[in-house]
Length: 203
Image 1 (cartoon, one colour):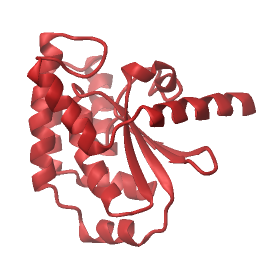
Image 2: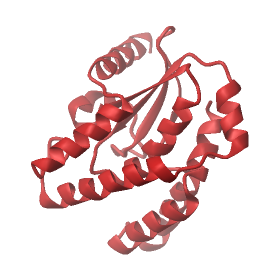
Image 3: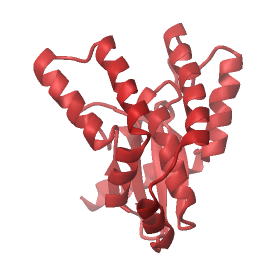
Image 4: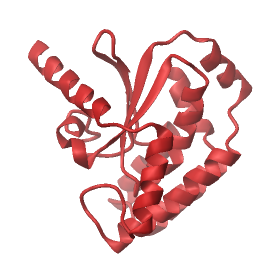
């Protein structure tokens, strides 16, 4: 178990060394779109289109998001010394909805250092944080760099959205385009509240 933990920590450290700040990540997504590309190893018109939507989505959320005062106070007044390592890709719709909230919360606390890591560039790392056996993103690792320890994880979706997905799969077997559209509508109505509430629990 100790060896496994050491290997996972090495993979996290490699990811951090190859990571981006939130601003750098947004610039990367935007710059790749100039060449009709998205982040990640796979390239397709569909992924580029998703990435374009997400680029707009993140820019909009950065301007419009409001954090509840009680959550803002809790983040501002809690002493922390951790890294929030988020594994994601630019084409990921859940990532685009979550990252602006994650960033706003991290900005409230000087002891939270947010770093964003490419899933496709760090496959081995991703394989250690699967969701129901899948490489679902975004995945946030709360990492104590000093003690080399993962304190908590979150993702790929906020708790209410996760329940929506589970219920839909139970009834229909899989997620179809209509559900994915409905999920984005839910995100837009929720305005990051559920994500902020979830992250407060693992602060």
